[in-house]
Image (cartoon, rainbow, N blue to C red; front, side):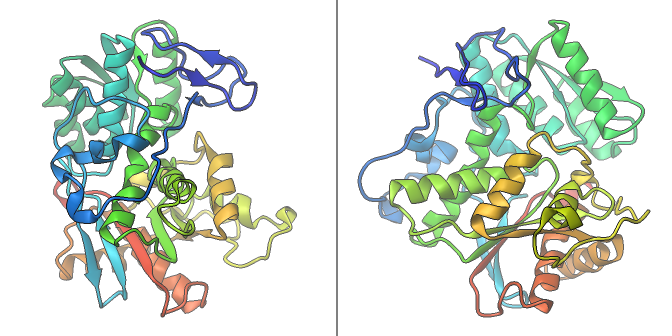
Length: 374
């Protein structure tokens, strides 16, 4: 039986079904009414059946497997030149970590009895939702910015999904999509709002811990737009700690694009009362190279800042020049990523220069999208 959804703000509960809301009537995001956790000790790595993909961790997942393309278990690679480990989240069926959330979101859509899913995306999430919808035999309608990369538009349209181009800002795309959803045109498979998506992205933390023999790193760095992988990592490590499978949650660091850095500005504003480290002054600078994180209004910004503060982490805005230098360095080292990925290793370099992250600390950096779609 599919689990109900609950509002953490007002405690209202919603049963599963094709008309289940995408957020609470009070305006807050929804979560699963129950959070599954395993009992007992973690399994030996050799005992985990990686052929099950994300559902190797079914004891942590609030959604049954209904659709899959074998996603999960991306490589964790030592990189002496950066003195960290890279989690290669671009090694997925559609070339981005968004497949984690797409698998669980479309599985939820099937549980709910949805016949058509609708999503808004700058590219990678749209491609992932459209691909998994095709795998599930469900119609998809994907709203994208009119200026989205042609390679990503092709990836969406090849699935048979309807592509709707919207002029204006990324927020205009979301607003047009929500208007369509609220008109009753389909089930909102939102990577920013749907709790099923975060159920999938939390598995990045479960894999990292398992690949490290159930130890958490000191710090994790992730590109940060809507925060779907960032919050997934936080939820996953927190679940592992609550289950007693790791000792503590690592510090989480988000790398935003300059000019699209609301989390950085909130954390480091003069009125916040926080230490002023890393605060970015208001400017007209925009990092449009990192197109995958050009989000000015994350749907779950308060949750992101709370996760940063609870783990003792931070967020940093990366400019276009630093992104380009980091991207070139990645490519020359054999990591064929899209530009957005480069903000995370660029942030690591800056944090080490400031001694915020020590050279001796154990660090994992997520590389989130393939250069094949750039």
